[in-house]
Length: 206
Image (tube, rainbow, N blue to C red; front, side, top):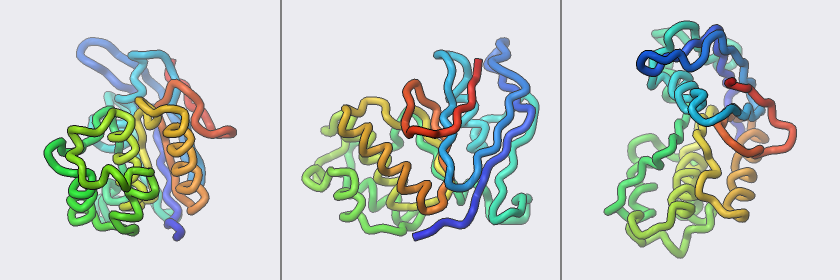
């Protein structure tokens, strides 16, 4: 499966939290088939930047553009949110629902390129499919959230600490999922404290 070419461009971005200006004059271009790792110290604004790129937070200044197949999307085009996944610190999973039910809910709401069983197997949670998510460990929840990204298969992934709570095997699985996404022509940006893929571009927030 291949994705349409989608890139995201940010220019002159400034972000304020309360009275504090976290950063300013930040820019990047994340092209199709690439991972950009957003790095910087705690509190620098990595998570806030991802939220700005996802359209969930208004920037103090600057512009963000989503470009699909070489064309900048405007107000009358498909909403950029329909081309992206945003995975934040919280996994956006419903604790009383089983892992399978969480994926089924996402598939009904967003559509799915892969089946629920395939997604559970892809992130090695097939045995936990009928468990309420509230019983899963933090690492298993992270695997399930990444499996949801893989199942729905949108070209642009915005990931906030995607390897948080994962053990060594889980981190390797996350890197494998992201690498496969890039190989299919997808684009990914990840706020992270540790390298995810060798050779990934890095964007520093000081």
